[in-house]
Amino acid sequence: MGLSLWLVPSPLEAKKLGFVINSQRKDPSLSVASYPKFYPHITLASLPQSLETELDKIAGSIPTFDAHAPLRCYFDQVKIGDHYFRSVYVAIKPTREILSLYEEVHQRLGLEPRCPAFPHMSLCYIDDADAINGERDRFYDELRTSAVIGFKTEEPEAVQLNCGSEGTNNWVDNFKAHEVWAVRCEGPVESWEVLHKIPLN
Image (tube, rainbow, N blue to C red; front, side, top):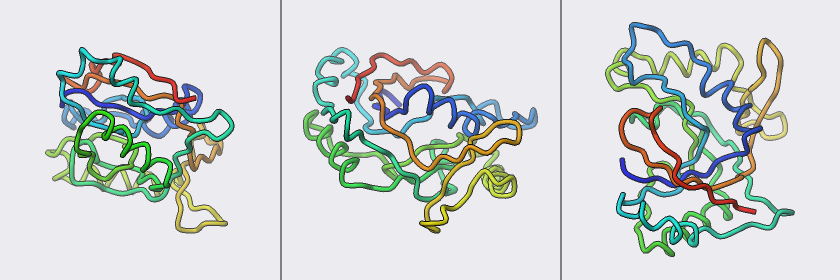
């Protein structure tokens, strides 16, 4: 995988989203690669691993946002994907601000954009072998039947996630982009390493 740039929420918002992303109980019959724990994120860029030695250059490619006008990432739809890293994910609304950030970062680094289904936030990673047996569909159906996925009254086509614990309701339909992380994505997901954190405000 190499090096990735992640657009991440604050620890408080990440904790809420973690009730959905990291709450799945692992069935021992599934692959060890299915349902690893990971920090909620939108992949902003996939970089060559050689840039690990140029973290200052990467940090310089990230524009900042006014604290009074932060970058917000709004949820659009929950989808079932056909790739391990897009097993079941939230499609994020492609607002002008988030698309401009995506284009500007790639332009400053001199790279061609290559983030499939940008922007999105994965809810789980499920091994292809388990997906063939319907595990991605099962996970999505469980979100629907347990009312984790809801729809906004004022915007029926847009989803929200119930991030409450122990039967409580805590509906979330967006998060504020807090930082960009440079992450070494090599080996098992839970061994990935955050190399640098770049504030956005």
